[in-house]
Length: 298
Image (cartoon, rainbow, N blue to C red; front, side):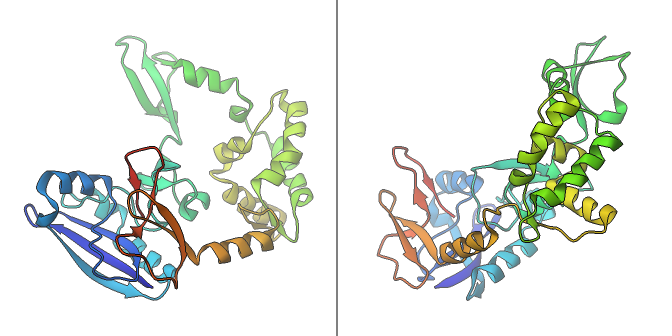
């Protein structure tokens, strides 16, 4: 099995697409899965595109790391590329969200991407407020610090949110309550949001008279990972955040098993193969959505 980074070039306008692909046939004809790229292929014709293999690896992690290195937010924003999202974590439009980094650069990313989970990237709306200007009636999306109740009216959705427990103010007292209960949710020194919130939700109802969810933690700390990082710093502890903990060892074993299997399709039928299996003729990496005229390729 080959783990490759490739570049597809439009021979008409020289726009490019860089992606990752897993195959046992380097000449399988695969050009890429990006939405913009597919539109361009439909417009210009497949014969006007050329694919070059830039790198070949023998494992997924090295391939994924190389795509992260090459397909940056700067690359995605270039006018001569078809890429829509930054590299890494096989593309899927399921759970895709708009995010931004600390410098305000924006792009699309899976909400399960480690860079989002760890708080390196945050939701694009974080720190923003949806308002209507009282005089002009214009709907605006402004920074929270620019909000002025004399000239702005909060939009109804935001006003509704403020009645939601997840938008309550984080008091020092409740922050201490959160920290006091971290250890109660720890198993084998690992903690995840689900186990922690099972403990905190009843406590929040007594404190705020409203339920809160993990959204509350993300609103106040940036992410659950950042919350645990803050807890460890202030309480001099070393709890490890593991978002998929169901029994950490069972999750790791499941991941280890699954990474050796991949879906392949011929456009109609789907099969799941080990990375050591021979791919049948006319099959390529991806999965066809049953009942829809749409293919999802990675």
